[in-house]
Image (cartoon, rainbow, N blue to C red; front, side, top):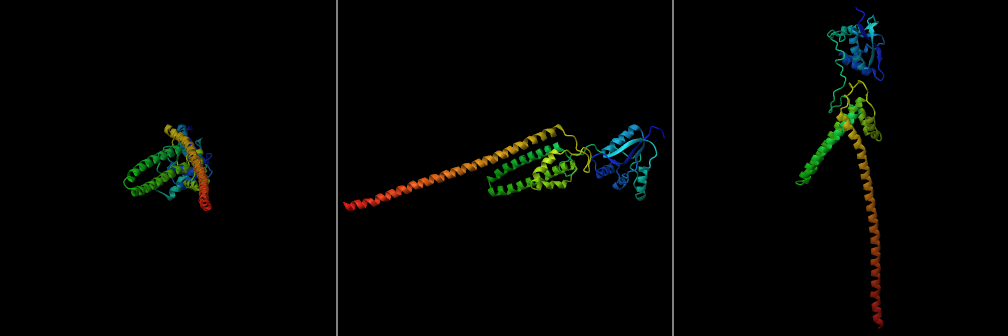
Length: 313
């Protein structure tokens, strides 16, 4: 063997911030192997993941392996205490139909590990980042408002014919829109949780008092995992449209908050005006009734005085 041949050596070390389970799953997907075989690579002893490579090929293999989260290195060809071939030979004794995924030329390191994940909206699988989470939420909200506007217009047309039918149909459509909005919103939020490396079951924190008001803010602020995690490769880079929609949603949130605040203040002012008017009317009625009573009393006195004067005459 010539001196310009190299190998990829792995001793079980991981890159900072990468969990062992994540790295093992990535390696299993990369080498099209099972977790049981991959587990044998994490013994702490040197393992030759690939041998007899030119330096350029070794660099390509090393870059692909780095994306899985492991820390490997390139070394010149020399004997090692433990080789990956020995690991797979042990596994082949129990599964004769399996062939080594590491032996050239069948191993396609770097080709099977995507740089970015595929975006899918209507699913709880995959990952999305902070800006895409905001952009998708804005689009979902606008679509629901548009559908709701059309439904209200149709409902008003039906109400002109039959109010009962309009109430029943409006209730059914409103319930269907609510369920659809919640379902799609859950899917988007779960993908954002996956980007953070968190379980999708944490969505239920939205239902916890006080925590539910802070949790969405964390989803908008916290950065996702830079590399692959147990939920797949990182999401694609944000497009210009995603950035614009995210900024629009961030601008819409304070406007919505101000609108709700002004609506609340307007309601309080109207209630105060109504209370003052009611108090004024009560005072006016009391005075008017007092005047009427005084007039009646004066009239009664005059009526009583007249007969007395007549009798004296």
